Length: 403
Ligand code: NDP
Image (cartoon, rainbow, N blue to C red; front, side):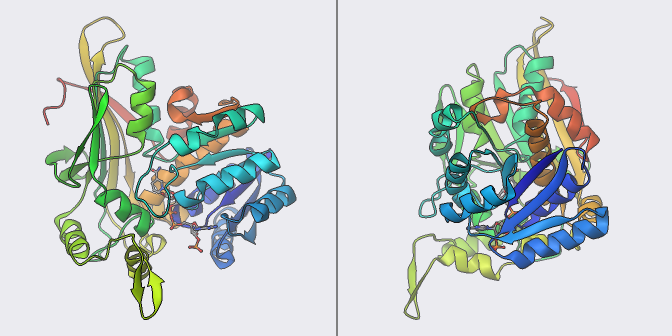
């Protein structure tokens, strides 16, 4: 029985709050605050209609630390769940420290003026959380999040070492729009247009954005082009799996998405440096994000499945030589929409946010300081994944990946 305060009222938050309300034995008192209160209210209405549970709502600018501290003191939650944007990670962590409450998020901090997402800003909070006897859990979404838990489950149950790791994120969904992103457009486009980086023999190798493409046949989706990208879990995985020789992250994009993105980049619409427009400073990418479809509106029309997983090669635990395993989840957009009113990209992030919160509130995961998912026991998290809408499957492959 716990009181929880969720910050942010987008697609990911909507799923997490619906799933929390379906688990009242853990989340008995749910509070939701975001910049636009009406968005919190519409999530609360949907939760009431679907589950019968009430959700208290508030307006907050999470970058205003004193206001956040006041809200936390008023609600008195056991945990603050940050499902706003990566820009708000540090102010919300500051507020949690000041008010004496633990913290969870799904994406690592990014400064607004530089498309650079790295853990060092949040890892720097470790001693302060430790000294305060509080826990901060970073990256409890799908990727990062489940992908790290999948990897550590393989390391616990199948492989003594992991030599090679490939994370494969496929969204086979079709929303019927010429160009739209499945989560926050600004964050998504910053991520996709950043240079690719992968881990190889102790260092990150940088290559041009979307410069490496391979075809892969995804179960339940079919053959798709996937592109090598940088993704934040490569930083934590390479830290917590010291023997890792190569770690890469791949995401699928359709030809239409790439075509639109290329044009938008070429005309300067994805830029994050301010420009003057009619006497006012605007950031082209923020303007673009404002005109693109809102991710939370895509649920109704999106059909198809996501298939996200991890392929790992290493020395087998049973001493039978080198082995390769593929562990993944397949999630159906229409099923996700029917259950929570949101498409599968929000669903596959919101469910792990709920599970990470449950791990902390039930003390299955505990500790003082700042933690990544790799540092905690994968088993209870994996059990909850299967029980709460994201079943997973593991199979042995014939050998290491050949791409
Ligand atoms: P949305 O843009 O749909 O929602 C973000 C919400 O945060 C909005 O309600 C927004 O308010 C609110 N917000 C923004 N700024 C502030 C602020 N200063 N104070 C309070 N609230 C604020 O994003 P998503 O739901 O798609 O994504 C949420 C998070 O999940 C992001 O950090 C994203 O990077 C992460 N993510 C992680 C994934 C993973 O697998 N780990 C995958 C997908 C997303 P308003 O409505 O007023 O703009």
